[in-house]
Each structure stands twice: as C-alpha cells, then as structure tokens.
Amino acid sequence: MYLTRAEQGGAQGCEDWDLYLRIAENFGIRVVPEYLLTYRQARSSMSANTDAMAASFVEVMSRAGERNRDLPSWIFRWSAGYHYAFLVKTAYRGGDYDRGLRYLKAAVLANPALLLRTSIYRTLVGILLINSCGKQAAGEILSLLPEKKGKSPSIDSKKNGKRPFISDRIFENIERRRWSAAQSEVG
Image (cartoon, rainbow, N blue to C red; front, side, top):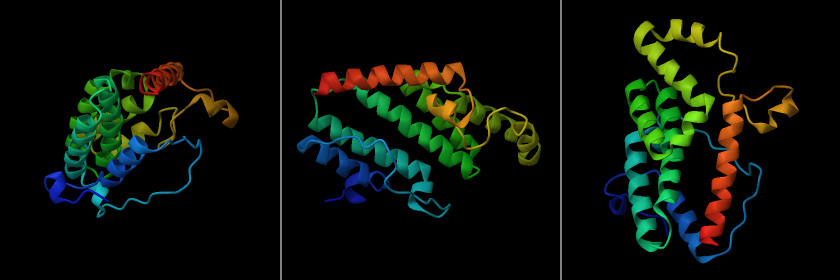
C-alpha cells in the first residue's frame, strides 16, 4: 500500500507519510502526546537525501490535495513549512549548508510563523558562520549562544528549570490556535 518510487516521479522518502494520510482520510485517529518510536538517520539513509525527500513530499501533498479538495490551502502550506524545516536540519547535519539555506527559505515562505522559533535563527547563524569562517570557528562561536545544540526551548522548559524564549512561547501559542482552527475546519 506504499507509493512506489515510480509513483513518486523517481523520488522517495515520504511514502510512509502518504500512507498515514490515507489512513487518516478513512478512519478516526487520535494524537498520542508521547514518542512511541525512535528514528535513526544515517548520512547514507534514504531520508538524508533532501532533494528526493522534497520531491517525494511535493508528490504526496499533491495527491493528498487531489483527494481532499475541500481542505483549505493553508493547511498544506503549514505542512510544507514543517517539512522544509525538517529538511533544513537534515541538510545542516549532513554539511550541505547551501541546501540548508534553500530549504530554510522554502520553510519560512510556506510558514512565516517559523520566524518566531529561535532554532531557525540558530540554524541560519550556524550556516552563515560556517560559510564565512569555517566549521570549527562556527562551532566555537555557536557554543557561546545560550541555547544548547539540539535543544529547542518550549513551554515545558520550566520543568527543566529553563525559561523558554518569549518568541518560542508566542510561536507555540500560534501553533495551538492553528491546530484548533484546522481541527474545527476539517472535523
């Protein structure tokens, strides 16, 4: 029941997302607010190929849009913003900083609210520093920033004794409201 590579125009990477969407279109689902599995990503894995993932995502969303013409277009843009933000992190971790910048632009164009996330700026600064002064110097400069690498402050940060950045709190509030709006429009 997975999309084949041929059905995705030669790309691959989002066939599981397509399956989840098709299940959700036909059955009631619930969000479980905890991690039920982990996902290991190696540089040689399929999901490390950001261009193939981007092309696969476009095909999956195009098919979902065709099946769900009644859904507002902003829901698809919202999803694209998050997908491209994922590709930014993947490209950054893989050392492909130019692609990271390209996907960062795509993420923000699709979902401008992402500009409220401090992790977006940290990634942008990291890419710009690496391009201008090299990876080692950039790492030293980034280590001076208050946020630890790989950690994104959230409203739950108070549990860890850390105060979240106000922009991250505003972003999370906006996302909660969007989620509620999406549920009422779809449901």
